[in-house]
Amino acid sequence: MDTEDKYLKGRGAQFNPANSFQKNDYVTEHPEGLDVPFIQNSSTEFFFENPKKMINPVDSPDLGLSYSMNPYQGCEHGCIYCYARNTHQYWGYGAGLDFERKIIIKKNAAEVLAQQLEHPKWEVRPIMLAGNTDCYQPIEQKMQLTRRLLEVLLQYRHPVSIITKNALILRDIDILQKLTALDLVHVNISVTTLDEKLRQKLEPRTATAKRRLEVIRQLSEVNIPVNVMVAPIIPGLTDHEMPEIMKQAALSGAGSAAYNIVRLNGAVGGIFRDWINKIYPDRASKVLQQISDCHGGNLNDSTFGRRMTGEGKFAEAIGNLFRLSRQKYFKDTRLRPYRYDLFCGRNGKQLTLF
Image (tube, one colour):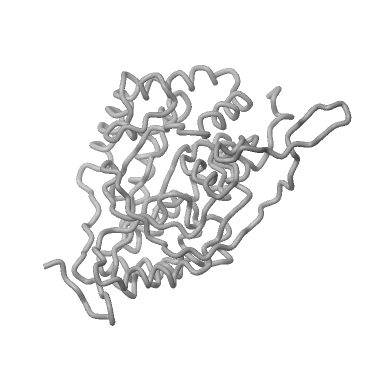
């Protein structure tokens, strides 16, 4: 690859775009009067935060969940397409390299979660852990915030849905089994590509696809309900892999499957455009065009009801391929529904919806 010398190995984003919420940027001053981007330490940094709340209501009608919860902001995985990159700007950082190397740790997460569940008007609905950044990213090995959150949810008998692409979830299989016995957990394993060379550049610090399929197998063997997320589908890059991903996930024991088409919202559009022109210059134009064709001529469409699955001929073809694959590999399987009647609220007293 003639652009290899320009590529930052081990990172998804290849630069740090200006924060749209900040008026000024740091630059390096030269005697000649030329300004170039300020060169910062490329190592990962960690910052601690004490939030006042952990659970956030989800008002998106096409997500099917009521709450989300994220113990970390920013994500070491570095997935180039991640829609959550934009949220890092609210913290004063960039959506590019900063998102991957400046990680905010909510160290009092478990305590705050318990406080919110103790509220007398709390309404029991599944909590997505984590709907923004991966709750099992590498720093979790040390901090164990996700494990502590699961312990709280088990204590209160509260339903939870987990999404991850990291094999670290196997560390908590003991808690997941206890939640499963009460029908309180669904696990979603994201598999974007089976091409290891592509994964290394697309999602540089994630588990390999082979390892993720092994995670599905190990969780399924102990009856933990697993859904495979074939997501995001990137037209012209990964869409052809959908049937094989679903086949391998089904063979590994997954009970259901879902998908969405990539949407490059906000600063992610420029980050992805820069990435694909460096990594796959020969097909960058085709990929960007097909993504745009799925979103009404734009790289992103935020309209509820179509933002996940897109519109147009390419989106329709992807949707048909998914439905055919689901019929073939997941015809007679589905995840067990959650139970809501086991919730223990204030003073450990069991509540009911009735």
